[in-house]
Length: 163
Image (cartoon, rainbow, N blue to C red; front, side, top):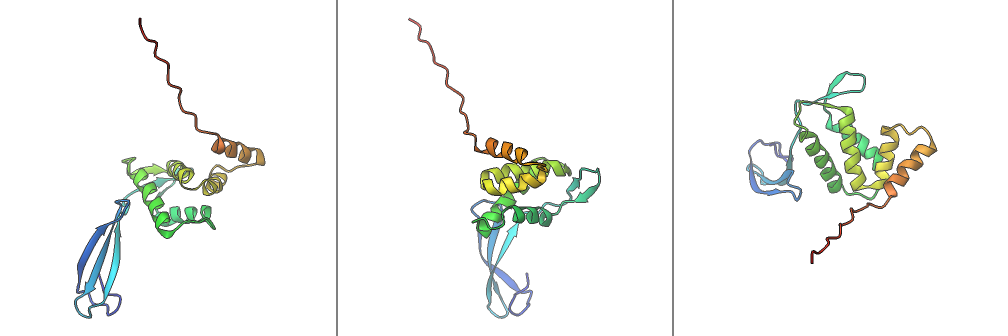
């Protein structure tokens, strides 16, 4: 790691801390040449993952593409950079849980929608309207109703006592 102040490669780690979500490590560093202190963030990176598109073509996984779609859906929503980073990490963790070196764009889209639905319902509707290609207001309305429906809990069965 090069010092941002003097560009020296001679830096040492002063302190390391795991982030709250456990998906990255924040390191406090000090330049041994000029004494400048700075922080770095080390996070997991998905490598060697091919995304199979709808037309059958394959592309390498791009975190930037996924982030761009999320940013559009979350535009003007009240989220912090830290919350955004956590969301991206959760989505990538879910992709990694598939344990495959090939994943379809549909699978990634469904994971993103699942996480957005929990994270921000407005962003979820925005993303879903593009991802699922809502063609009319009725489709949009059906998705809104589904989203707003109360979650039903299964009823507990009454246990009869034997006499």
